[in-house]
Image 1 (cartoon, rainbow, N blue to C red):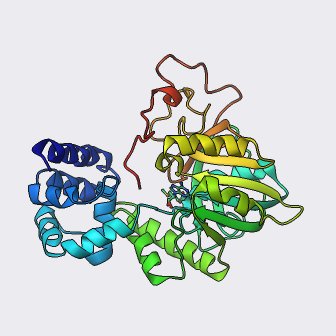
Image 2: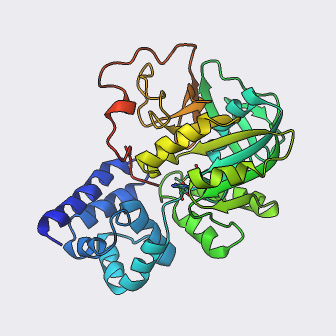
Length: 347
Ligand SMILES: C[S@@+](CC[C@H](N)C(=O)[O-])C[C@H]1O[C@@H](n2cnc3c(N)ncnc32)[C@H](O)[C@@H]1O
């Protein structure tokens, strides 16, 4: 590994310092320490590309022995436990499952209505397949009887809030590596993926409660690539149900050619399509939103952008008809994004 390559790795960690500053000051500080620690950078360089990122390193450390107190503790852990750390970072992936995203999905599902067969690609442990088992509060207005997973969301614009919960008759998930909420190691990994910080205990509580819901009535999970497994998943949809292909925070992880193949595939199928992804990940959703998309996701139905949503589902800004406005040259992430399509660290 040359000095130049180590410097490139350090740069990735330096970029993460500001990215995590608000959500996780602890990880922000650890990332700064890693960027200046040549021993740790050398350890990371021994991993395959795509397995060296801060989110994976910190989750693996947390999984194996808790969050290091500071850069010195991280240094010591990496050097003394390098074999287990290496094995964990090769075997595991960043596949955070955030059930709170259901608060943003609910209005989209409500516009579809009827008996829904949810087919979620990039499902992780499938915790977004239970929108009907959670309760909601939109600007204080409740939807559904109170449940252990209770999701609060602020809104603006004409959000089509439902009066009740959707009728979900099938829950089918596809993932390269589906996580099993009944497996203690997978549960521990899901918990390790949550960042330490101001919203950590709320997120862990929600994760545990949602995992308990899923464990009582597990979804059907298919292992494999979303394009390859979609036909098999759709074959499981019961007669009379409306198949809804669903995904949230998945497409940045999918190589561009596979992403294109997936979009073409879904467009050609007799299904409804609900996506919550970064701007431009679904073609046609990168158009400039008044005030910009910022770190927000775009909620789209059948490829049409309908709302701007907070990445973890706590806010929805529904678009007025025509609100995205004209495309400014160079401002469309559909066209300006690099081939990885990634704007933030994978998580
Ligand atoms: C950030 S997680 C999001 C999980 C879940 N959708 C959520 O929002 O809570 C992204 C998931 O996509 C999965 N994934 C990435 N590429 C995939 C592919 N080509 N086919 C199927 N799943 C994939 C990953 O394994 C991971 O579980």
